[in-house]
Amino acid sequence: MKLNIYLFYHNKKKIPSFFKKEGIPTDQLVILQIAYQLLLSLLSLLSLCFFSCHCEFTSFFINTNYYPE
Image 1 (cartoon, rainbow, N blue to C red):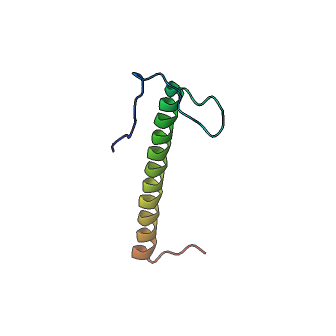
Image 2: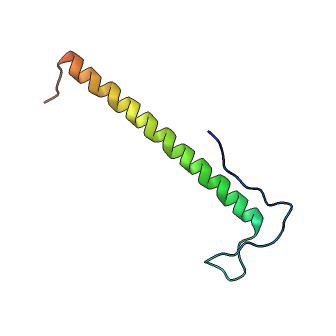
Image 3: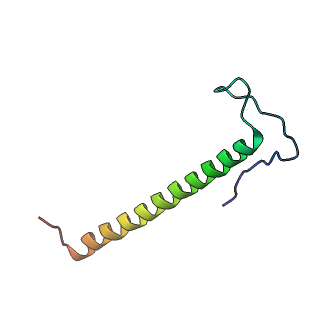
C-alpha cells in the first residue's frame, strides 16, 4: 500500500487553512497526512477482516445445514 505523503520540510511557509487565518504549519500538515493515511489503512484492514470472518461463518452455516434457533 502506497502512502501519499508530501513532505514540505524544505519549505517552511505556512499553507492556508480554512480554520485559521494564519494557516497550518507544514510540520503539522505532514503529521495530519500520516495520521489520515494510517487511519485509512486501519479501516481497510478491519473491513477486510470483517468480510473474511463473515464469509467463513456464512459458509459454515450453509455447508453444515446448522441454523441456530
